[in-house]
Image (cartoon, rainbow, N blue to C red; front, top):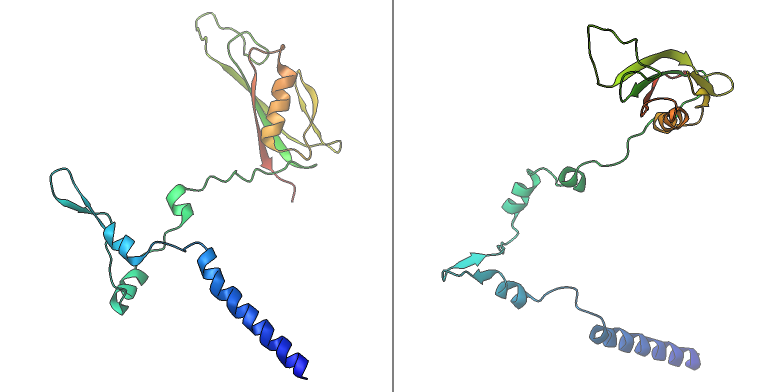
Length: 181
């Protein structure tokens, strides 16, 4: 019993010494009160002083005033820049495709008309079509394109790659018009 009491006393003494000694080795958590007061005002070039911050007493009336203020948030300060949640295309979904070319005379251009001149881009809307059981859709001059399990943005890149060398600088836009319920 005496041995247990001596061991407990030694343990308590070691813990007390360790906690007191820890204060000299740990870094300070922040500036001292005198450092805050000294840095509150800065001299300006014209001989005046500029308050960098105000030191106020936190009273119940200050707390009430702050409660009425809307909360600041990082979202409100910086905006919402998360990527959009683009849907994934599945079998049975209805998809439409638009294809543009840089000039007339390409695969998707209409016939040239003698009384009109247009050097601008030409486009074609491929009618809405369901994604087949094989997970693909048909695009003229690009054959069957596997779209199931992909996002519209990824599919338009596939279509553009298939049309390179066939169309005049082809661009495509893929829209999921009616997802399968």
